[in-house]
Length: 211
Image (tube, rainbow, N blue to C red):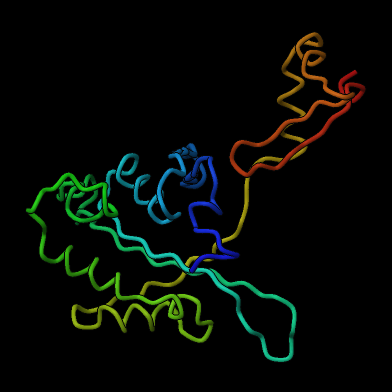
């Protein structure tokens, strides 16, 4: 639904979608970047999975205002559901990327599709926004509602949190590795400013901190 008369593409504007994957300790983070040139954020995510992950993927996103009883302030809630065709023993998916995973306009026209994958993504497409936004509908209940005919196994949930390993101290240590002249060249308006490329946190320093 357009917001204030603007489509989702107009709201997103020009830019890039960066997907950062942190696989934990002893593993390097990696980042895939695709342009926000598609009609929706979900379409851009499909482009990422097609080009970078190369895993047949279907994704549904929803966001909207949430009414809280007794609270007149604005609350927004977002929800998402994703289905992927994965190999049983690791490695690449046995499906070609043309197996219906990409949004309209991205498919190469191949008509050979895996029946189970087609069924899984068609079922996912039946999910409505209110189901993804309903705080009383758990993920397990939604999965069972969609895929109970094929059997659903729900594993313990993994807690998610917005987090980046960058810090003021780590950035300062990195800057100390430059020569005084190199740091002097970084000064703008009396400060050295560094923006983390992963989380967009901005750190500011004065030249005197490195004297």
